[in-house]
Length: 171
Image (cartoon, rainbow, N blue to C red; front, side):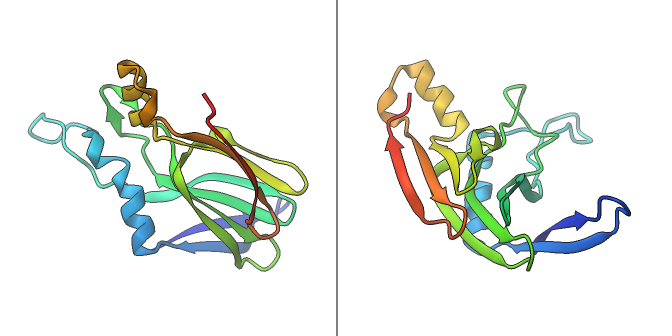
């Protein structure tokens, strides 16, 4: 039960390193939690009805920063829909591997979720928005109940994943 990312030589396209992320049981259940509770539908079954699918967990975000390969976990959700809309990519975990050795450098379990479009870095830090999952966010907006919405900007050191600072209450 692992996820492998292959680093390729740019000239030969040969694999030069593999980064394998082994899912813990907690990660698997946290990742799966984001889909079934919202009644996500998949392709039609032979009967013509829609049915739930058990999509595979994948490296969702992939980026390089300094000597770190940064990733998040999510579903391979290309075929999954919720009320006719594609499922947003979101994850409860951010992790980093040492680009040279292939060893996991650090991993963070978030309070909420992060979307790949909300992750950036500079030479020293990784910055991301840890916020209420997308379905809950839309439900909160419809109800106008901001008490159920959580959002914060987080900075962690690329070297060790330790929190540098957080800024709570982003709108």
